[in-house]
Amino acid sequence: MAVLSIRGLTKRYGRIVAIDNLNLTIEKGTVYGLLGPNGSGKTTTLGIILGILTQNSGEFEWFDGRYGVDHRLKIGAILETPNFYPYMNADENLEIIRHIKKDPNKNFDELLSLVNLLDRRKSKFSSYSLGMKQRLAIAATLIGEPEVLIFDEPTNGLDPQGIAEVRSILKKVADTGKTVIMASHLLDEVEKICSHVAIIKNGHLLASGPIGSIINSDITVELASNNLQELKSFLATLSFVKRLHVIDKWIEIGIDESLDHSIINKLAFEQGINLTHIVARKKKLETEFLEITSKIKM
Amino acid sequence: MNELILLEWKKFKSNTVFRVLAAMYLLLAPFIILMGRDIVDKMQLPMLTSAEIYEFPKVWDYQGYIGNWLVPFCLGFLTIYIITSEVGNKTMRQNILTGMTKKSFFISKLLSILIMALGATFIYAVSTIAIGIINTDGIDLELVMDNNFAIIKFFLLCLGYMTFALLVAFTIRRGTLAIFFYFFYFILEAIFQGVHVYYYTHVSRNYWPINSIEDLHPFPLLRLPDFFTDKEWNFSILLPDSHAVLMSLFYISLFVAISYRSFMKRDI
Image (cartoon, rainbow over all chains, first blue to last red; front, side):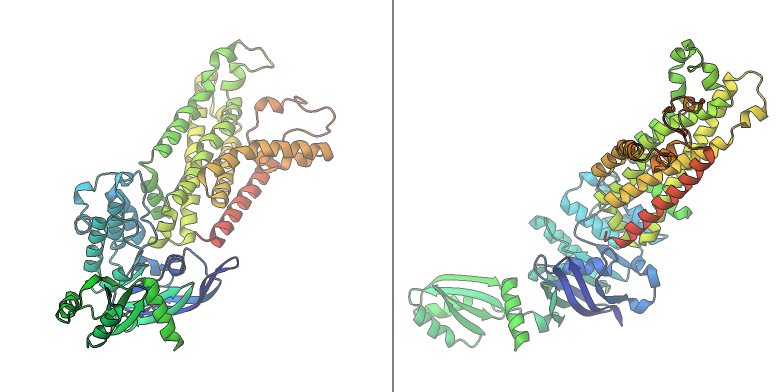
C-alpha cells in the first residue's frame, strides 16, 4: 500500500527549477532515502509534501487520501533544523507537539529515554548542544504514534559522536517497522539506514528503487607500486577485481565490500610486487551519480 | 477554538517578552491616568482639571485616550512579537509540519488578538468605573453608564491597532523590521495626511486607517468646539463617532483579510 504518491511535482523559484516533474511512490514499511547533493531539491520536495511550500504544478497524496487535511497528524517530521521554542524546556516543547498532535499520552519519559535526554528534560532548549537539539527533534517526531517519519539531513552539523548517536536512534526507529523517509547527501548514511533510495540531482529524479539495485556497494581501492604496468597485469589476473582503471600515478579497482582489501597486499607481495600505496574507500557520491547517470543513458 | 487558545497560552505563558509587556500593560493601563494628578489639579479651565478628567462621564474619554498610546505600544508590539518570533524561531513552520493547518495557525493568532483585546477592554471598563466612582460626587448608575458606548469603541480601538500589527507581522515577517515599520507607519500616515490636505483640503483626510482608529478615543479636548480646528478648513479635525466606528470596522476587516490572504498564499 502506498503511503505517498507524488505525480509530476514541479517547483520553480523564479527562473530556477528546484524540482522538475518528480514522480515517486513510497510504499508502507519502507525506509526510503532521498539522496542527492546539497541544492538537489530534497528539502524542497519534503517542504511541498509537508505543506509548507506550494508547488507550481503536479500533485501528491498521503495515505491514499485516508486522513484528508489531517494527514500531517499521522506524520512526524523534522525539516532542516530542529525548531523549538528556545525559552521552553524539553517537556514544555514536547507538550506543544503533543497538543497539536492531539495525543492523549502526556508522559514523555520513554521518548526522552530513547534519545538520552531524561536528565536534561528541565533545561531550556536554548542551552542544548546541536546534537541534543537534534535528538529532541527525533523524540518529537515520535509523538502521537505517527505512521510515517520524515528526517531531513538528520546528522548535518553534528560532531562524530553526535552522528553516531543520531544514527543509532534512527536505526532503532527504522527497525520498528514504521515508514521512514530520510533526505541526506551522505551515501554512507543512506546505505546504513535505508531499504530504498531515490536519487535526485538538480531537481530531477535519476533513479529509485531498493537500495541494492541502485547503489553499488563495492569498495574502491587505490593501489600503486614502482611499476604500474606490472601491477596492472597482476591485478587483471585477480578474479575478485570487478573494475580496473589507471588513474595518473595509481590504479583504482573495485572489490566487494565483504572482502578484506589487505589480501591484495599479501598476494602482490607473493608475486614480488611491493605496493607503495594502498587506500580503500567508499565511492564518492559524485562518482556514484555519474555511474547511475551513465547507466540510465544506456 | 478552545484548543487553539490553550495552545497559544502554552506557547507564551513562560515567555519573558510576553510577560513583561503584559505586566506593563496591566500596571500602566489602569493607573497611568492618575500619575500626573498633582499637575492636573493645578490647571484651570478650559485646561485639564481633575473634575474634567476623573469624573463620570468624561473619565471614559480620557481613560480611552490613554489606550491610543498604550495599546499600540504594548499590545501592538506583543501582536507582532507573537507572530514574528514564531517565524524567527521557525516554530511556525514546525507547527505546520506537526499537523496544524495554515488556517488554524492564522486563527490561533487571531484568537490571541481577540483575547488580548477583550482583556484590555475589561481592564479599561473596570479601571474607568473605579476611578470614576472614587472621584465623582453624587454618583448614580445612569451617570456611570452615560457614555457607555465608550467600551465598545475601546474594544474596536484595541482590535484596530492589533489587526494592523497582525497585517504588518504576517506580511513583513521579520521581527525588527516589522516593529520598525509598525511604528514608522504612524509617522508616515501623518505625513500622508499632510500631503493629502496640501493638495486636497477635504474631510477625507480624516479617513486614513490609523486616524480612523485613533478617533475612536481622540484627545478629548479636541472635541471642544473649533478647538485646534484650522480656520481655513470647513470641517472638523475629528471623525464623528459613528464614522470612526464604521471606518474602524472596515479597516479591521481589511487588515484581517489581507493578512489571511498573504499568509495563505506564501510559502512558510
